Length: 178
Image 1 (cartoon, rainbow, N blue to C red):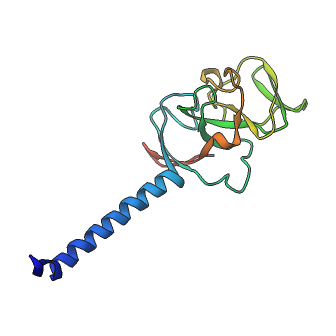
Image 2: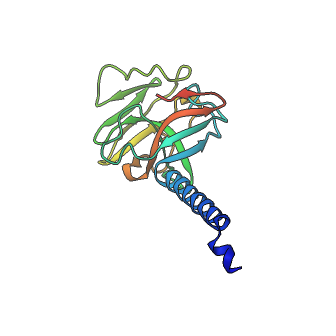
């Protein structure tokens, strides 16, 4: 037995254990701090993201910068932080947002936001909502079938609750999310 610990076979086994351990630790680190794998259970973001799609979400883009209007993000749902939601940022901190006849207006603008990603003809009047500092107003792209900021008890998502930015869909096919 003493000879086994000095043998080349033992060194090979030990190397494999070290490589395997390092690989597992690296995978856990990447999954916990750099990327998130998200599965989409609903149609609230159709046509951009479809029910059943699988996404890669990058966790670090907002570490040194702020989210931008129209970013598609994954975040802790404000009314139940155990759930993750994916929506599009529509209004930024300090802005007034109002929806009239399904069109989104920011800060009393006469022109609605240009939203070529919206699925179908949105309906309804909502707001006005005043977005607090360090918070965001979220809406789904499938506006007539999306439970979003318009309907939540806690209307806004704070920056620290944004988990990451959706980068691309990898299943059922590849698509960059924008």
